[in-house]
Structure formats: C-alpha cells, structure tokens
Length: 97
Length: 216
Image (cartoon, rainbow over all chains, first blue to last red; front, side, top):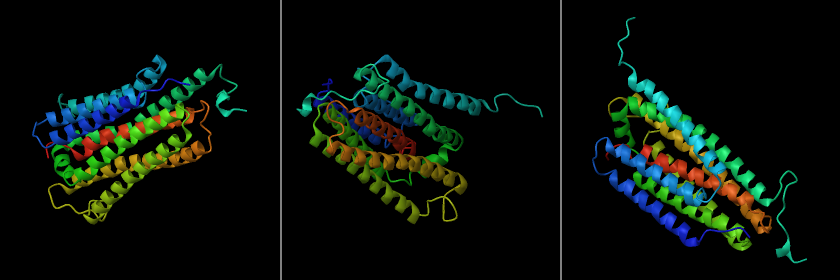
C-alpha cells in the first residue's frame, strides 16, 4: 500500500486556505492604494502554492514533477512580463513620423 | 481468491507500478501546464486592459457580488479538501468512502455552478451582459462593457472546466463503486484530483482579479 498523508494535514491546509480567503476579502475594504492589487495577488499566489504543495502533493514528489509544475507558470510569466514591458514603455521614446 | 492479494495492474510499457504512477502524474502535470497557458491568454488580456483602463475596471468591478464570489471560493476550497480525502481513500483501498467523497466533490461543484448561475442571472437582469442588451449609466460605457466581456470569458471558461470536472467525478464515483480503483489501481483518481485542484487554483486567481479590483 502506498504512503498516505495524515488527514490533519489536509484539514489544516483547508483551514489555512479559508483564512487566506478571509484575509484577501477583508483587505479589499481597506484603502492601500496600489498595494491592494499587490496584496491580493500575493495572497492568491500563497493560496496556489499551498494547494499545489499539500493537495496536489508537490511536496514529496519527484524533481521531474516539480519541473513540469513550474514550467507552465514560467512561460506565463514570460508572456505577461514581456507584453507589459511593451505596453508600459510605449511613449517613453518620442517617435518622429 | 482473496481480492486483497491481487497486485495492481501494470501496463506492458512500464517496468513497475511506481514508474506507471510517475508517468501518469507527469502526463497530467504537462497537461496542466498547457491549461495554464490556455487560461494565460485570458489573464494576459485582463492584465493589458486593466493597465490601460485601470480606474474604469475599479468602478465596474464593484457591480459584481463579492458575497457570491467569495462564497464560491470557499465552496471550491472545501471541494478540494474532499477531493484530497478521495485520493487518500483510493490509496487506502476504501471503496465506499472513495465513492461518497467523489460524489461529495461533484455536489460541491454543482453548488458552485448554481451560485454562478444565480450571479449570471443577476448580471443579465441588471443589463450587464455585453452586447445589445448592455446598459451602463456611468462614464465610458465601452470600457465598462470590455470589463464584462473579460469577466464572462474568464468565468465562462472556468465554469466549463468545473462542469467537465463534475462529469469526471460522477463517472469516477460509478467506477469506484464497481471497484475499478481497488488493489492499488488508483492512478485515475489521483490525476483527476490534480485536475480538480488546478480548476480550484484558477478560481483562486479569478476571485481577487475580478471581484476585488482596487479598494471597494
């Protein structure tokens, strides 16, 4: 029989996720200026990592699976950062038509 | 023959059961990477429009019901807990427990879809569905409509994934009841679990990005 995780680990994971949900929900009502977005994204990333580590068993799985799990994320970061790099810098250099 | 002594079924192409399990999980993670990029196009579109029309996004987002969206986040997180227990039950060869946990996961998926349906209906009644029916009395109705295009495209694609997930869970529940995942043959349940958790993660990002834009 395969090794299984203790039930309490899953319950704690779920409680942590619900606590993070409450946190992001509550912070939305506090005006932090541009930091609202940063905190909301930070909490979302934390939740995604917790789900991947404990529910999806990334913790304790092979290096090969770790690589496959982060590959999609890395390409998504390339996609968004390079495209934003274009949009943000438009107009920085005056063009003579 | 005593059923508990049956070894798990190993495909001819694999050396042993460990390799078979690893291959199944690797395949699923690679599929999930393509899913990240599938949703990624929409997340990119969202990012650019939010960068371009930031202030209008903040105002438009307030039309969405945070209570319904937040409740749905909790529903999906709890469904993920049931799914994690389902995979555990499959590994421990608990057929009855596995069947009920899969049904429970599917039911919470149905609760999610019902709440989403109520929300979509509210949006329709409030003339927030983009198209000829769309009405906006604030500034810049075109940009507001754009936000709702993105909202419906992202939540719609996610809803399709939840619907597929519900179907998978129900089929797996039937197969589990028939004992197809007994004796160490729990690969299918495990990778279906990975799919379900992934769909949960997508919603974890959609909720703050669509419902909690800026300060409310």
